[in-house]
Length: 441
Image (cartoon, rainbow, N blue to C red; front, top):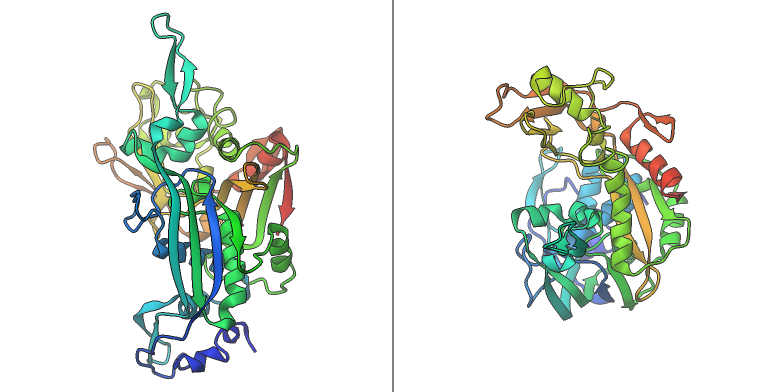
């Protein structure tokens, strides 16, 4: 039996579906029964998660459709290494989670997958909605007439900037417990257990989960989910090692755990973990302080491209023209603070609007009120493999013509050692500077 037939026998014929390429009409709904139930609690702030993207719904803060989307991602991450081509993988994913569109196969036959064999229902309770300004920290101002002020911590700003820039005080879900019931076919249980385990341990609910928002703790389950160590071992022991397209994989990923044994409360652990990536990209590794020039080469490359010496900080001759931070996720918006300064520029790919960050920073719960820091670097193709770089200035720029074919790959130094790209440099920074311990999947 091949990997693509594992899910399809015997239930595939039982559902009334035919093999790909045989020409099918819309199948009847597959038989399901309640098999898996879980109770989960929220341990970090959740933004979005409801039926309307980016919105908080006090009555229904978690939407089953959103959970299905997260499970689809983690199903692919757990199984991508088993598939030689993405088409076969997406067909099996559709048979599990459903697909409404009709697909034309290679031999011209029409294939309609239908609803799939997984149905999800959610019940929420113990819901607390709060305002984001409550996450600010009271700090001294340095002024005699105002002894203190509420201020964003750098860690929170880095994690939450998509929410707080457009709306200075958006609501979020502070506390939440919810029950999750999954009806599915017997043949899908083991695949779902693995996807659920990865989602609970490494993912979350709502938006910005790769920066630790919406992280979860398992309260109880009708089935034993895999521990993180068991999940790692299961993926390590599978001999296949395919890379279908640009699908992020857990096979070949890196897990970085803090080696000093610190176990703070969930929210502090979340902010401490986010700060590892923030300090690498910004202060103190990215620049000495807010008044100094960036140590990254992108800003100097943009200064040269946008007009040279007329800016307050001209490009330094020692900085080459490449854009290594693209390998940590795209797009990147470069906005200069000095006056005069180059206009705003957006770095992206010609082929894609965005490339999600391969790095996950989160609190990993080890007790009801305690977590340890966990960083995951998913196995994804480097950005220069995914497509051609494009640097686009804002329309009011004196030189609004996009620059195509920018260079992404280039050496970076951490603690005096040179690394070939930004991902390797970040792993070295977390391991050598922040004292994380590396575990390879």
